[in-house]
Image (cartoon, rainbow, N blue to C red; front, side, top):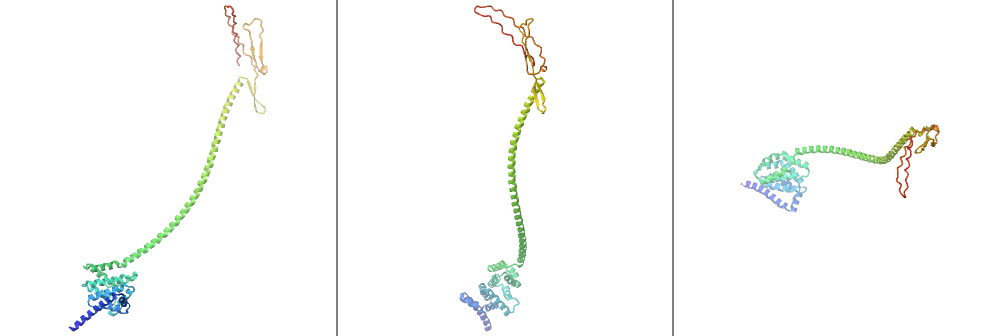
Length: 362
């Protein structure tokens, strides 16, 4: 009985010592003393071999607090390396996972253990180191055991389990993401090269378009100048056409007049009044044919034995060219004198003279 009481007393002494250390570490100066002591954290870590689950839960709470401060993570890993050598573990955290798997009846210890694992694994900034620590716990069967604990009734334990699963790195997914990322990067590089080529082609096309636009502008200006010249030429041509039309009209009128003159000349030539001859120089010469007109004056009543006087009008033509005179038409007999009754103070009026004879036909 005394021996058993001593064992119980020793267990209680370890628990009391851990509680005292927690009280000391609640103060900044005490916490600094624990952190700077070369063996204090190692001794606290070795207290995990205690049979009392409450003592082990309290130890894990202290170790989690140390792990959260700057430089504490390396101290905790060093303490578990020491634990491995002292306890003869094959791999680090082996005893811790053994206690966690076997103490399924003590929820407080399981919550403290799961909280410590979360802090140890997920408080590291280096992703590769986090994957390494995660792989250590995976090798101890943590992932399979957490699948069994998903149906636990403890909300605190479920919170810690879910926190671990949310922060865990799926290496396979990461590899797939890395491969996908590399493929996307390669595709992005190809697209960038293609984009650079398209930009170069676009710039070249823009330059060609600008050159074509400049050339077309020059052609347009030249065409506008040519249009102005053509318009000016059209105005000159229109003026010339109007002048030519006026000249043509004048020529037609002159031709018509000449034609009328030719007809008149031909008519006079046919009547023998003029003669058209061509001189030695080739010019046409119009000569007037002299005409002799004989006027015979006869008394109203010709007396027998009277002499008929004739007047000859010379036109300057030779006698042989004078056409024969047409036969004379005897004048009409004078009208008889009307008898008038002489009245006092009135004279007898004589009858009017006879009309002149008609001219000879031409």
